[in-house]
Image (cartoon, rainbow, N blue to C red; front, top):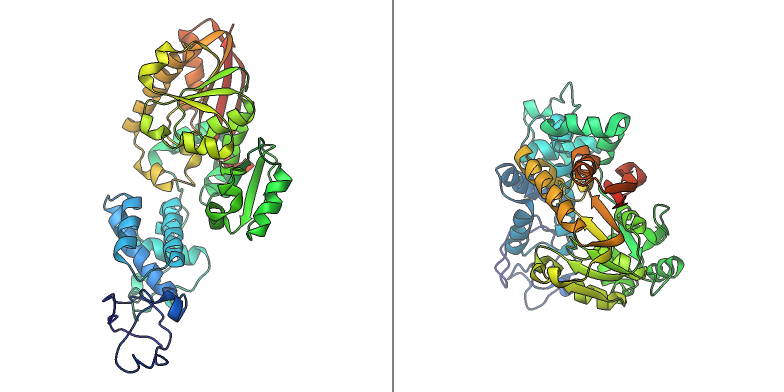
Length: 428
């Protein structure tokens, strides 16, 4: 049955909630309306109606368009929406992030860059009947008006910011269109098998016991792609036993190309994903980052993975001996990972990109100072832009004529993972 009463026990109004019949409770029969927020086991798990989820997405997207950060909006919605279960929160997140990935094309299909326009565009893009959602009933969005019902004559749009399209076309050439379409989709979940503890086959078998399907991916020998129930991984034995970590397959392929020999400095380690991969291959890794806070989880992750990683704060780096390999995974626009962080592409500005280009140049010069004689410098970004990738290497070589490129490689979403670039350099 459907109820519009406030719950008499937790005082939450069950917005868009499908309540089961509570008349079977003898002490409450005919007297109270009780929602599942308080008694999920007694009533069984229920969920918001699809129309209510769309209405919630519309509200969040309107606030995002006005300038609020999307993660803050989703967190605040969850905190004040006690009626929402985990499936509701996941479904809402999927709706919102799909709209961010496809902002321009959904707005074109929906006739407006508004929350309603984006959700209308999403429904049309996936072949759903919008009238089944825009009902004006219960907690669904109001019915469509005449203008909204008129499907736009032209709904073609590019889902990159206009100002950066020329740079991306120049960098990607004939693959621009295919990559732009690929970037509209949700990125797969990839895992890196911890070769120090398990094999790919062992991890795939272990995941299956938790109802998670996975398969090897050809881009990296220790990579597997999760093909069903990706959200279960965080609670799986494979994760808790340190047999695998979440890491994009192209990121893994980049780490595979970095020589894992002798002492290795991960100059921009961040959370330590590549440090873990390199340590698993036998390198003696020292993780460093300008922000010590970013590295706070590395010791716990290394212990779970069964590897050793030293963590070095910036003020202590000058006391270190020079390294056989220095890996600089530089801060960048993230243009290669916009499927995972679609808000990033709409927040990026030319001014911010210029700041990043200066930072990348500084990172290259600074990290090179820590390379021992006969050692190697590896530079990487998760960007598709030439000015963050090969152009930076060309500029570095002009400033440092005693260095030479040994190899360089580009990865794009057409290979399955994120967009990445890596260059391996040595003193000439």
